Image 1: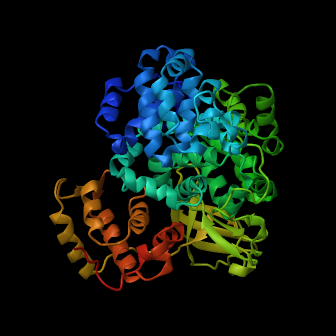
Image 2: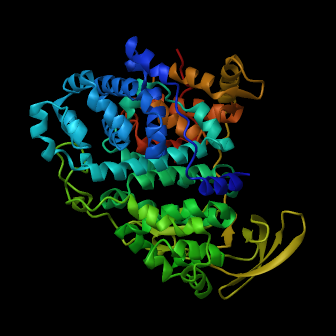
Length: 586
């Protein structure tokens, strides 16, 4: 079902325009309700960017009302500055809307009340607006920010349109619908503050996508949440398209992301268009593409894909084209791929911003330091797992990745007769428990029990990725004290049933922990990564355990910052550890 919806999405990128009720905007201005009109503006923006110029012009009779609303909104909502400029640019392309502005002298007076810098940016979008702004702003039009120049605004508009379409389609999937209901931060003002707090909203979007992909660590999660994680990655890559310094900052996660993409494409072939979009942007990054080309492990993973999927990815980059198999290459060069895939590369290229001077405008205000100036990373190996559970290893400094355990982490695995092991079954896509019967040179023979209960025997190279020692799983088991306390809290939550409770009601309880909103957001994203609308007891208990850990670490810089490093610690350590004390709720 998920795959079919993804396929339908890519066949219907141009969605029907659904204009909001026009009289509502007149009421907002008349009753001065602009401060609460964020959602109304966002919906209008989405329809404007989706619509053709002809469709917009057909609604020109509503132009006076909407221009009035947009000026009132722009005067009070500096947070939405970029989107406001995009909407002005698009509306001014419609002759009827431009004419309505030109003949309404009240609009000319109101635009002069806006901040001078915003007037200049609006004046740069169209000659009709240029004639309306104040003389002082007129002098600064030639000096507007690069991102406010019309050609760059139109690139940003296309990015925003793509992102709106992804979000709209994502909400139609079961997991996406749940996420929309269960979003922890729903207050408009809080959402504004959250993005303002982030140094680069684009980087935050990329990190969110990477974290979502990293959270898909088994086959069941891939089936239930893989498409939604892909959509987050698509949004992050679209927002960061062409900005190498942002991609370079996340290079440590490259193997995990590439493996996620190729695993998803193999398990859900209908997702290939979205996977191709992300691969296109990642392979346009010099640092990410260099890592991919240097990794035997990733190249092997690419060649494991069916030829049609290899061909689709080969079309996204000459570097990938050189790495795919001969049959796949013939398909790609011969045009034997779906038409929708053929258009991905051009579409992704169209939204990449030209490179900017290093050190200009990438960090916080007044910061000229770039990622290239950071101290060198120590030679360090990290272990990770694919969504299917295969272990691989990645060197932070050299960017090398390999299936074989390096010496720094203990060297090659050693097996002996009688060892309990697990063997991957490709046909059943599952790990099968077994025992080593014989070890001869670098060959290991093991007897195993298949998922259907039948017995089998298999001989494998000792370092092969489909063979692994039986490892004790991390346990998130609750103590009896925790279970008793959390069950009492769970039963007291209004709504739902004995087995599940509404996420919204649970979020109300979490607010009573008195932790900062930024901290609560990290707790929520860790405990409810799929943004489910209803949580069972185990999921609720995870929330409580993480709240307890954060309260115990309340004075820690990690908790005070409430950013991504906290989320990583919660996910990798705190979920599996008993908290020092039970959580406290006012």
